Amino acid sequence: MSQIELLGAVAITIMVASYALEKRGSIFVAIFAAGCALAALYAFLIESYPFLIAESVWSLIALRRWAETRKAA
Image 1 (cartoon, rainbow, N blue to C red):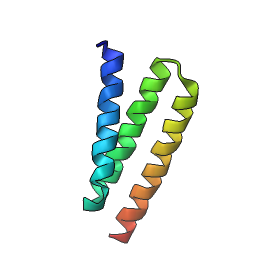
Image 2 (spheres, rainbow, N blue to C red):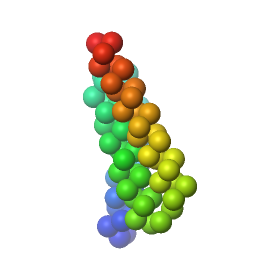
Image 3 (cartoon, rainbow, N blue to C red):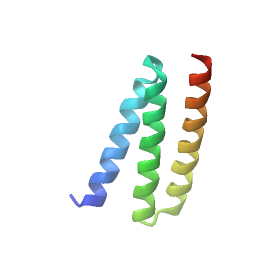
Image 4 (cartoon, rainbow, N blue to C red):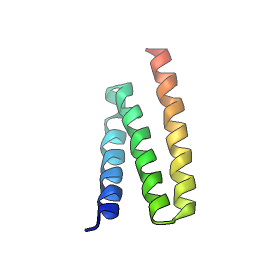
């Protein structure tokens, strides 16, 4: 497994785990956003631009949700 493939696997693992734990606290929403950003970086490195756009958008959405959950708490 190359380092780029490892980055992709780590990003997806972070995304899945943090998504499953989101109801436990807003920190997991922030971690999900970071995982999406890592997945976007992976997409850039493998030159998958549609995936890059999708993951970038998900990262921004998650950051917005994180900000909203912090305000509510």
